Length: 331
Image (cartoon, rainbow, N blue to C red; front, side, top):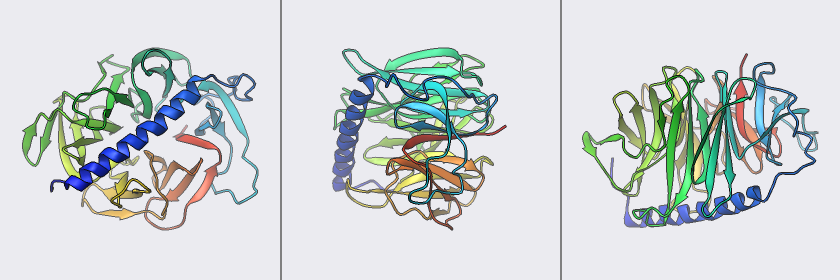
């Protein structure tokens, strides 16, 4: 693992500033109020009774979509959708649990994480600083996680950083930031002041997770152990990891260009061999991909949710126009 160049560090800082600006705009629009006449404002479906593809529609409400998984052509109608009654900036569901991240106003941006059961009834509300960025639920449904953008950390050269936390619904363990975890890089424990974590994804035992950490201008994929409270760097240039249902592969975004314009492409990493391959999506994907099944990825790009085979074959297909935050709920 080699250190990134000074030019690379400046590009990362510049990219972070652009991201922060975009998020701030999104936060302002969202905090301005929800549409009162949305067709999705009432709860018609829930994961307990209605498995399938859940997405966040462009008006902010989470919906279950019927059909569209084979891909939509130009001019095709948007598939039928039913409302959950949830308005979320980020949403994810798995294992009978859902998490809904909502920004709200104040002197500084704040986020509320609503933890919900399979019928989307709130079981826990958590508040913390920052603007929502990522949300995940472990396969068992026992652990929810979030990543937020925050400002004001002294160590952040761009005055911008991320903060990632999680909550275990079974043990009620709440960790609002991973920054204190023991970090092992190149065989040595480090305590960097500039460590930023984002994009947790869980194995099915609720203890082991994967995430991205950035420190010293470099990004690493780390494998974390909650009980041991350690995170070990596995390799560089892996962002927003998403573990496959069988636990053998990680979908991630990889920086392939030195610049702030269109820097990322979607890749898949085999954890046994540490070999990676690009998927058949050539656009810039700034998202934490979701697995629709063992062989298909879903992600947000160009204002909609798209799907692509994880093995590198096939081609991207639009499955949910005017939507984001895909989450496949299985029976």
